[in-house]
Image 1 (tube, rainbow, N blue to C red):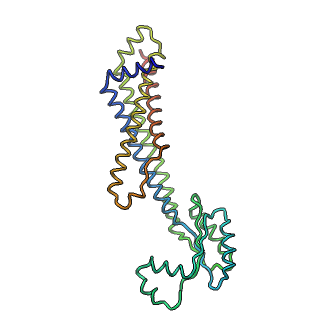
Image 2 (cartoon, rainbow, N blue to C red):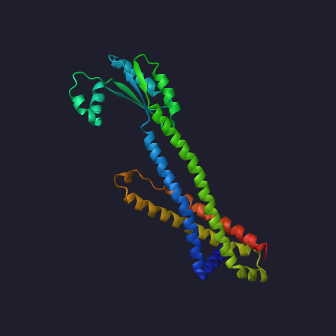
Image 3 (tube, rainbow, N blue to C red):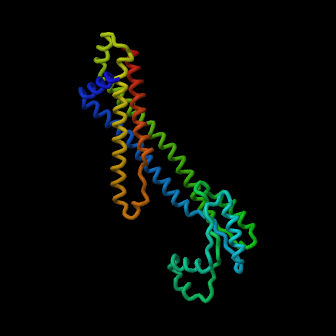
Length: 289
């Protein structure tokens, strides 16, 4: 292994420009894929943030005993779809309306009686914040005698579901397209690298070197270029992300970057392409010499 590594490093040092161009080609190809994935991750993060607002609200009839509401809240909290149940009193509902509905502050300030009912706000579990689940929970809530009405923003939740489905489908198709293009570009780059050293391979064959001996340095060099290219792609993604986040003002706190796992996958993807690309290109060349 040490001999193979020395040979791979020697070959890379002998043609630094070609090696650098190969690393840059891999890096920029993976950068386009990584940048798209980064945009997709942030879009999905924004959709999850929106989905946190999906909740089912059950309005309580006036005069309902507190004991009945407490007992019902415990029953509702036991629903498999429910994450949290919160009781909002009539006074709290009015205070919230005065804070959030600024255009009606004057009207709410002069009220003699509170027109807003108490309610139970039901938050759903993260993976269940969709129209179908919200409708099922709402139907169950209507079965409680003290519930006057149930709302969950059906049209808004429906649009959110459609947006999530569309984003998932488009992300898959476009992501695969970018990945295929990156693989093709990197494969061509590695093929050019092998052809550039055709004379060296021919000389090694003349002195009796086996195919495995010839192949190993090229494959190891491809792996090293893949690792460097993947690291370069991750660094460029970070540079673009940092520059974009710096120009976003207050929104910058909502943006997310790759985690350790995603960065490792980018480098692993580059390494895999470098390995298999070199293996196939050298093998193809050896069959014709």
